[in-house]
Length: 137
Length: 403
Image (cartoon, rainbow over all chains, first blue to last red; front, side, top):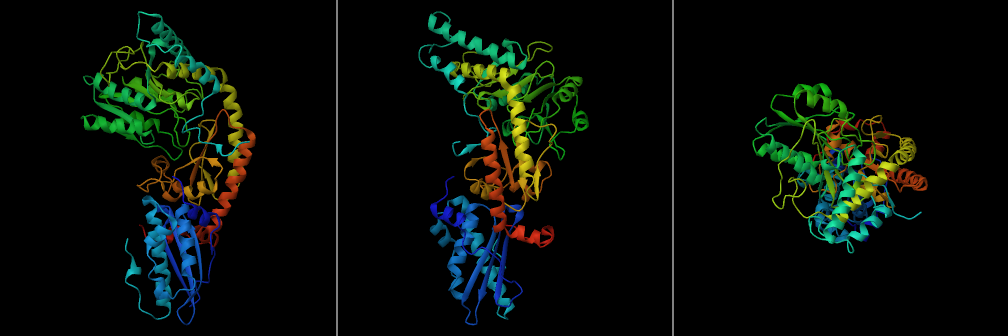
């Protein structure tokens, strides 16, 4: 199966690889997937007082499409408010990276990771937990 | 050195130019039907087939009359298993095989179950070998066939076929071997090894695709299989269909070259394989899958923990290898072979099979080592699991959200 140029670009030059301090109250961490399934994504956001995402980092264990999906997600998250970030849909990722049907689950995982990270931030800061982040597996 | 480098010789091998040369006249000048007994065109084709039959038989220590040409190992496996089941149904309906067999054997056995047969699927030990005591315990008076592969296609482990055939014969059953990975690579002798039926194919030994053979013993005992295709009664009535003369000539030539050269090839390739394996297992948390003592000389299956196989292969962009990861398949299930060794799913997802071949050079192996190490390190830098492992977090204690 051939990968799209955008997947190869993100895979070869992944954006925002790294780790934020998960104990900080400004940082939300989402860890989704499972090693048994062949993909695990950890996505982290740093959020300022106005609920704007100032930084995003990821690390992913998975195939090229999973790595590219999470790399793209971090690019999209930076500069967004946490409410706008909630609107990122997995199909946007599918479209941007031209993922084939068999790789759609990679984009779903990225969307899950975004929501899990936002939820972690919300809970840490006394906001109501998100329904959708609890899991839609 | 040309890129990419082909290290997937268990999937298929490039054709040896000498094989191609032998085949070419049979596409045009000697185009006849080998079954045309009454003119020179038929005779020329038949002569090519007869010579090939001798070349094939000689490689495996058989008589040429015991060679049935087919379209490949899948057909040979099907013909052997279904053909024996039909031919010997008066005697019994029980077949024994094992869980790491190729799908051509496993699915033929499932078909037998649908027809009312009974099949025992022996497990394998963590090194990939079957337990001979378990085999013996599974034998019954209804057992007509034991079908255990010679060497496994994913991990290369070699089953003790002499001991297996002896057990089968002790209980009056036939022994069939899927030897797709071994014929032409290591010595196989149907008499010394006690083989009654054996499947193999040309394209795994530097011959063309679309042609293979089934060895069917003619003496002590005389074995028969019921044909699975109706037609002109070719190949002693066991496999109808106009013979693929150029393919058969290619298989013959490939067998001859293997007979003359496999000893040297094996010696050279096992050194290169060992070099590759030693270098790659210098990486932390890398594991060789399967028994390393009873193993094909040209194969190494290695798991690199905390990186995923498909992602890894993408970083090994100049290397053609294969992975036990199933990320490419719709099922998302990793290799059933690795899982049956007791490997956890994550290790199975992290495996890469390196398959060297006649045309692999040391320069290519050195390049492969360098690129693989680089790829593993690159992906570990990206891997949250690697980071957690380095922090001393026990990944088994985390509650993962299965999806």
